[in-house]
Length: 125
Image (cartoon, rainbow, N blue to C red):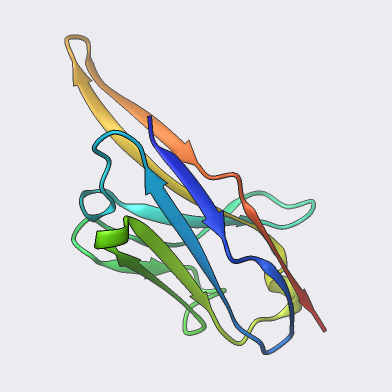
């Protein structure tokens, strides 16, 4: 079982910055061999993937955050970060950390998805 705990959300003015953290724990789970994602969900909208970092350290960003957000990780702390700069009111959302594992068994592979509890980010204009 993998646990993900986000922190770092809050209220910030437009143009400001925040850094979110996602601490992973549970069994032998290690972020340096698993892809980690950040999603967000604004009121009345679907949850969207905004960035991820692969096991080998490659990163991808949604167009809406490219150039303003940066994902990184500290393997020693088993923690992933989301640095958010030049924040806009439309960045207001609950931000979630996500990962998954695949377990091989006699009946094939089974995927398990894990989500954090979410952290609220509110950007005022």
